[in-house]
Image 1 (tube, helix red, strand yellow):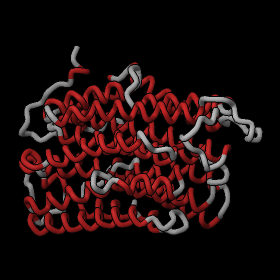
Image 2 (tube, helix red, strand yellow):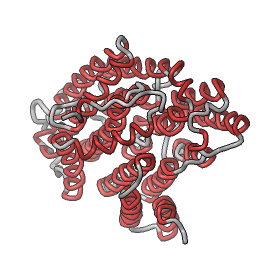
Image 3 (cartoon, helix red, strand yellow):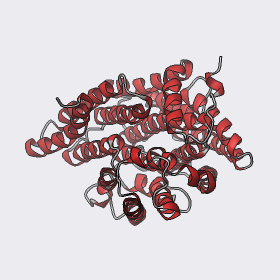
Image 4 (cartoon, rainbow, N blue to C red):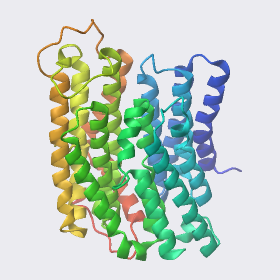
Length: 457
């Protein structure tokens, strides 16, 4: 009899791909087809999460998260973006991302890694964006070389069999770190993230970036398989991540293009995830896993509201002057404000818990460079407040035609995201406790466990 978890995994992965092919054949009702496929993937992933062991629950939780984000993205897609090209690309990305989350085989992980980069090489989706293409190509080549070295050294491609063995030594480890740097957008390979958001469709681009495959490689492969090397050499990547968070936060202070500014905020916050995963403390790793969820939900909310504003008011929005859009779209203004504050750690939101854990974990493992994290977060808050005031506050503009505020389908999805980050902050134990168990399963066994302060009575 087939393993039920394997059957659910196959359903979750194959359904989006099948739906993409089906929609290409019928070429109509693409939103309904995409919604149905995403919903089935979400249900299958949720069933996998129920009763999963800590070592397995991280993959299932990430599958639930990404399926939920994709489902919401398809529902809120503006009508002008809801075509076969965009929806088909989103479904292809969903199946490829779930494949990477679910697998324990290095070759399958490499295949998923490459498949998720395919949209950047399609000129119909993205313009000639050389930096994203080069960065993603370098990351794929580095990962392929690392897996080749690991396979030649250990004669195994199953991750759990390699745990703690450090196969391939420093050469494989260095190649994996290069793959993370170029995929995640860590300095000096950070510029491609803003280029991708600025030059492509906003919502699909945000989904692609929120797959966080760089962090996945760290959590699933580097930390458990290379514990000794991580202890000796991985702080270099953590320091680069913290430096990236600070540098991009400074860069966003002078950015006036809303797409690029939100991309910088997202990159700065997501770089903190790597610092937490490398902290080698249960507190820091737990904070990184929770912040992974926060960054994904909040940035998707921000990019979605921005795209809805572009559709209503034109794509030439700028933060160089006050536009007063709150008078025209008050609901969108409220959603934008809450998602932004949730991203930068407003007390009462889930990110307040995740950033508290992250700061404690990074300061414990990096007493000097860890100070960069709260500074970067504070700068991100300043940049977001400037963007919000420029877009939504000020004198009402009269040059706009009468436009609708958030539509009902948009309100439901955005409200669900807001409720998640707010209720998660008010009742964090339901989200933090499972991540604690996953952190203890991910954390190298050479380090004694430490219970996060946020979980202590």
